[in-house]
Length: 176
Image 1 (tube, rainbow, N blue to C red):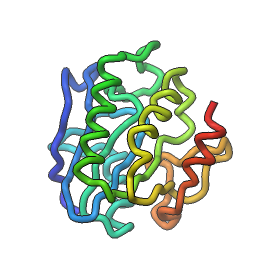
Image 2 (spheres, one colour):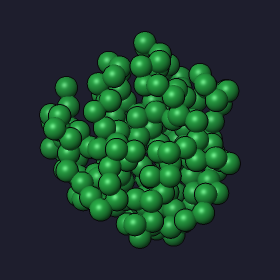
Image 3 (cartoon, rainbow, N blue to C red):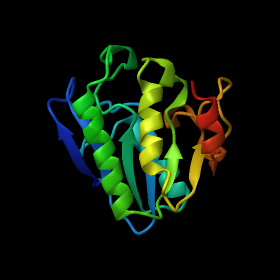
């Protein structure tokens, strides 16, 4: 898969916000990660390379990378202590727009155990789920859930684990 995405972002590479990296295709995979690092429309980072590999391996020719938080940070611990509400709202609006354009897209949930890194990240997933739950596509995770019960981050997963159905409703009942 060639890397030619459209980037919707604001601000600088560190401390700014990226709402989506979208590479349109006929068969789309919406991916929910933790937060954007330094990938942009010209250079994928290691996570984006893995996302592209999983997308291609699953038969997808397009993807859209969303995140729980739109704040750019190469270290999850350097994310802001509190959620930037206007940026969160924009992140949800971008997700709603994607779902409107790709109503049958499958969704890969892939944020790993770091959903606990900041108190607001679980709320971010609940809010994103509220937007994406009307998708007519399937929900997936990579391989088995982590020992802590979270969907795996692609960077730490092997391609042969593949995309497997994610029981998102069950996960939502356990998310505290």
